[in-house]
Amino acid sequence: MTRPVLYFVRHGETEWNAQGRLQGQRDTPLNARGIGQAAEAGRRLGYLVGEARDRLAYVASPLERTRHTMEGLRTALGLDPAAYATDPRLVEIGFGAWEGLTWSGLRRDEPGRMAERDRDRWNYRPPGEEAESYEMVLARLRPVLDGLTGPTVMVAHGGVARAVMVGLGLVSREEAPHLEILQGRVLVLDGGRRWA
Image (cartoon, rainbow, N blue to C red; front, top):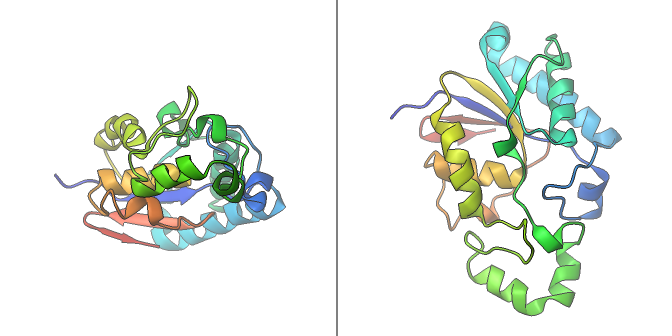
């Protein structure tokens, strides 16, 4: 099945990103750098799509960092910053009890759990009620991907990007958790190709 092109943007930087903290589904705002990254993503997208910007669908995770990235992006495109949809299925992977912690701290304090995660990053689910594996994220994203009817700009999260790329058949489950998804960049996911 041919899918429409998806312009995926990871939200701009937050203070928790700068500190290396796992945000997951916590609602954290963009910092000054993140605000700049949102505007830069809009400029890059404008270069890619030109006049077609008015004909794209725009959807974001409802978390503050993604909404503000979308609004900065749309402002840079010369579009109404508020004229986009949100979808709760686009929220970041839930890290459960690990949210707010750092990977270095977890490696020091939870070596057993981290070793278990390293054996199968795609299916590993951290401790805590709200925690998810990437496979669980992909399950909630499949209806979103299947519902895309035309070229779409999606502003979401790094974990969501990894699951989306697996769902679109662009990377394997083994490769996806190791991908670096840069903030404020535009990933063009087009047919069987991905490029930034």
